[in-house]
Image 1: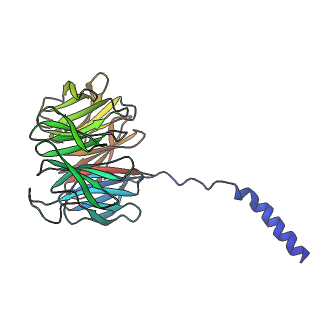
Image 2: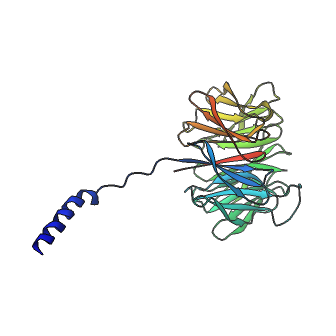
Image 3: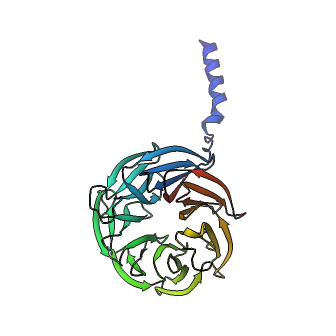
Length: 333
């Protein structure tokens, strides 16, 4: 018995250093969720391995796509193939990241196109293209809490980093509606160039930028004054700026050029184009990793995503996805 006690004590001593040791951190991974408008599904790409690891059927036309702040969910706007059609397919799909499955639908008004998630993950702001409103969805209660009247044919939805303001771009009225999230009221509306598509706030919330597809420009906005301070023409005006993201240090903007088949790199301070990166055909959605090192674009008719190294400003890989990819969302672990 004494010998057994000695053996047990020796084992305990050997294990003591391990008891206080931290478990090794899991390897970093980047998952890219791509909404495929025509194939009615979402492709999941392992960005590190540069390969498709899942395809998630959603049963409807899918466009805008965003991840939750905690990275456990991805939300995607579903609608009909026929414009203004009103059926049960108008919703926001809820994707469970761990299982890579659609686990439900949230009501989101009619014809939802794009969306943004609040920093606490409790609400979605969704543009309803056919109705001229933005729906505010309570995620926990699974209901549309309220709605706000915005411009004609709303599309882009951008939220400030602190969650206080939401911009809704409207294609036909060429306006941006500003929603105060404390009241969910439109507190300002201002004009931009023709057919605005997307918007993005600087990390400090003092500036924002808005793309205009038909106008062929990017507008710089003073957020406090709700005023456009400058417009930058992209290329010869036929390149059709669509998606936009800003680097973590707010020094660089990246803009998908649609028919220009490229991404424009803009020096945000000098407000000029400093590089053009060729990608696939008609890039639309765009997303940037947290550290700003890697950029992803959804290249519609090419049925692929492009992976761009922002340091070299070159596309380093492409990955085939579904039919007519539209949007891109990133989950980093």
